[in-house]
Length: 227
Image (cartoon, rainbow, N blue to C red; front, side, top):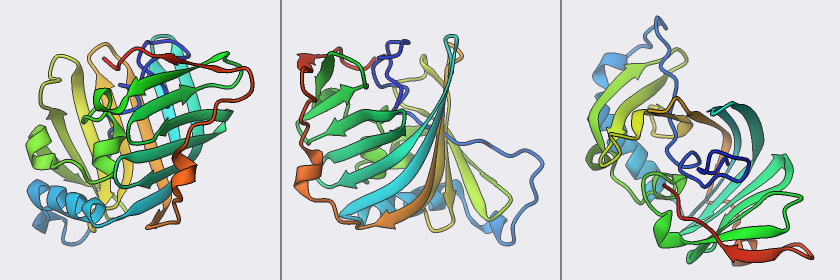
C-alpha cells in the first residue's frame, strides 16, 4: 500500500481509492447488455455486505511522482472495521487497522505511523468498499459500466467530494459482484492499481491478527491523516 505523502512513507489516499482498467475493443460476453451499472453496483454491495471476513491475494502498482512501484501480499479483513495488509514484496511492510487506529510500517523504519481509524474510514480507503460499508450508487457520480473479455465488467465513476482530486475511479468485478481489480487516477497524474486473486470468503480471522506489535526498537508515532 503506498501512502499519500508522495514519498516512500506517503499516507494512504493512494491506498485507498482504487480502480480498474477499461479494456477498449474487448469482445462483449453473452448477456453483457442485460447488466446495468446500478445492478452491478448492488451485486458488489450485496456480496461484501454478506461476508464476516475475507482473505485475498493482492498486487499493487503505484505510478506517478517519479515512482513506478510494484508490491504484493495478502489482505485479511474482518468486520467490524479490521484489516491487515501483509506485504510479501517488500517483506515486512504492513498496514493494519484494528478498528480504532491504522498503523503503517515499512521494514527498516525506526517508527510506525498511527492514524485514528475515523480519519481513514472513507471511500479513499479500501476499508469501506471491501468490508461492505458503502453504497456505490450513492458514493460515485456518473456511474457507467463496460463489459470486458472473460465475463467481468468495469464500473467507472467519480467519488463524491473528490472531484478536484480524482479524475477516474473504476472497479472491475464479476457478474456476481466479486472485485478483481480497482484503480484510482488522480488529477496530478498518479495512478494506483490493485488486483485481487484467490478470494477466500469468511476465512479464519482471529482478533489477534489485527493487533499491532511494533518490531524491537520501533516507536509508534502519530501520523498525518490521509489527504
